[in-house]
Image (cartoon, rainbow, N blue to C red; front, side, top):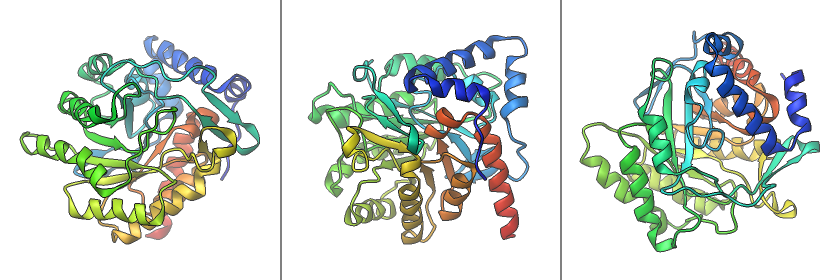
Length: 343
């Protein structure tokens, strides 16, 4: 069940990838300010919620299909994305201070493969700006689940990273519904990819400690690389089973696939690896833990297969950039039809 691009999407596709995305987000903000703009977004994009609602890690989702980190990194379009019918928005990667990212062009298309090469370096307006956006939830954003992806500040010293992740976690804790700890920050020249058990535990144990002292419970997930070895994936699954970790998001972009292109690959080239990893994690953990499937979700069929592989939720990013918001409604329909066939 493929998708034809709309005329608007074809026009965007002719532009450089980052220019196209910035234009889309600006237009989204413009539409959101119109008197009937939010209604129009709902009519055009929002799927019917019948058969889509679910509970995952104790949180109610109206739809299992959401927006992945990097699409709206600063949370500037939460109202418009909520009006469009997504089940959740993962903002970030959130870092303590503003950072510009790498020099442009930092997103390039592989047009023949429906994929992107990402060297963005996580441009961000920083924690304070993002806090201003998540503090002001309105009637439109009350019903959308907001996740916070915590990433590595490129300019920081490695010994400060644990404190910086904790700082973002503590400040965002009361304003978001779940957290994703990104241990695959690989789109800048200064990468952060802890892979050993000790390095990962050093990062997440302070978060568990802080959460134990809070009245409200916020789920914590790890976002992992598709380039992990079998042994490294097993280490992450062991951590999931043995600690208070709530789930895994798989996967980020692939540097291994992007070697000849000089960046992290996202998009259709990543689809099979992402689904394969989610299936393995789900089976080895006996389907006892939530998984957010991300990476390579370009077509409705990809989302359907990801859910069948064991994902509880699916996060879209490159698929929305390259194929448009119609992907949400079509993928939602595919998921409902697939689940109805299984009954």
